[in-house]
Image 1 (tube, one colour):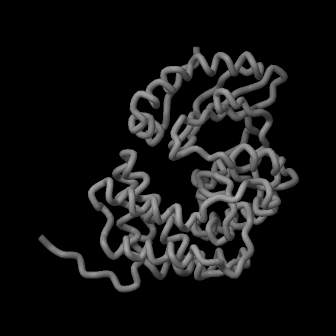
Image 2 (tube, one colour):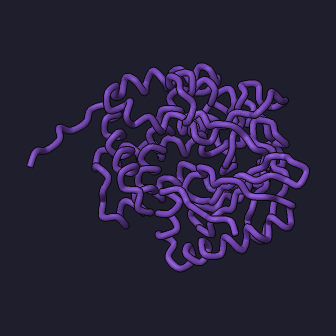
Image 3 (tube, helix red, strand yellow):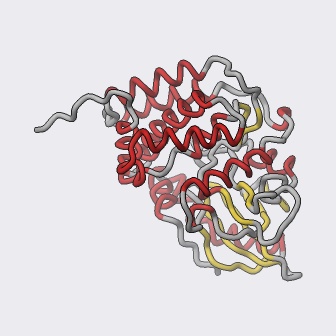
Length: 316
């Protein structure tokens, strides 16, 4: 029987789901046995897979390396666009999807190398590769995914609701700025919509094991949310991390990176900045909501550093 070990954020997410999460976790060994028989797999080690899935290396009977991803039964984390996007992309800008078990919500995927997050290098190099990889991923037809609520409006709802539910952990000025940006972003921008990845941080860009079509930068994206939005949204997510760097460099550092990614992608700079800020705040609150206190507080704290005119911090 394969031993299942979840990543720390995934364990916190399972705990936050209560009986549903524990039931999913307890059932994983049996599900893996079933999938091994269906796809003729032998299991390798568990892999880093974010907070909403179990990801494990595997090998087929004919010796091909694969990865299996089993998604948690969490309505707040369900990404209905993931399978349609991967299937339609057929490897262009994205990992190749070899099969999908809808009953267990399991994906059989191409095996890839290290993520950009795990690759040494300056942030500017990481951002350049992310932008070049996203430009490939944005080639999908809009009809790949259905029309849904505008992302800015759904993030506004998430920010307000989560902040209230958690007892208002978000700084007042940070909250007001995020909500103002959400209102502005809900209006159409200058760039036409694309099928965005939706969570384009460095851990979701992985190196291909060999040069191939659809990966001119040597990387492809994994774990897409997949929805229609202006491309500045994805660029905003690329700027969402880097909290340790921002604690030293502050707003001027992120402004320089924002200029860089927007120019490289040919996308509106101001919308990129607004999406980056809104994503930083909404993700901080979201992570706090399932117990990721350290990461959540760092994201919200870094958002305060990015305010144009922050209030002085009160001393008690």
